[in-house]
Length: 276
Image 1 (cartoon, rainbow, N blue to C red):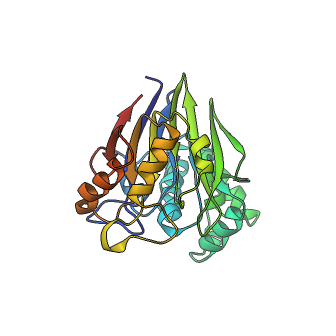
Image 2 (cartoon, one colour):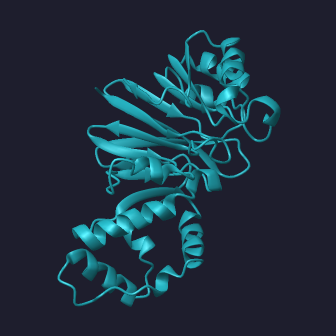
């Protein structure tokens, strides 16, 4: 197995029927990389225990439905530091401006004023205490925040994630990860953009945020029909329609995409795991 992907959540804008917003877990070379972390993703990620099991997180853009669960994820990491003695921050790649965004958000909860025992025997507690004594935020201690310019190639462990600027109403990165000839591309939120054709060329799995199909269609996103058209132009092997408004929109979304794309079309609400 070269690459595997698990859909933790794909709801557009807000969790629908208990299904989280955007969050996609890619496994490559035994390393687990989370693409986006919207509301409900921490619940899905920690469903089998209190350890997140991640080797890195990449955020496409700073809209709430793609980032809000970084806070509960940070609390889960904090527990690992306090209980298990973890002292290694989790790499978090976020677009430029993300560090200031996280600090301002974290300050709403007073995290910089938290106290940890400086005389504790556990290394995680000692590391947190030292950080807080220097007026650092513990949330920005458990994460290794790495701001990136959209277009950069990100290094996470043994893996590279290439990014590409897309047309959205906030700076947003599409992402591509390859391993042993297998290729996954994630559009993130984007309008139809011909430059994505080259970026997603020959993708084995092309995840496209086709956004709110049905009566809520529109906005700075692709429609399911446009997603199908883009997948066809890119000669993708399989298309996954993400970010739909609700599961009941699936059949109409698939039918619209199928007017343009003849390959396999999946609904992120339905097919949750892929192996390449």
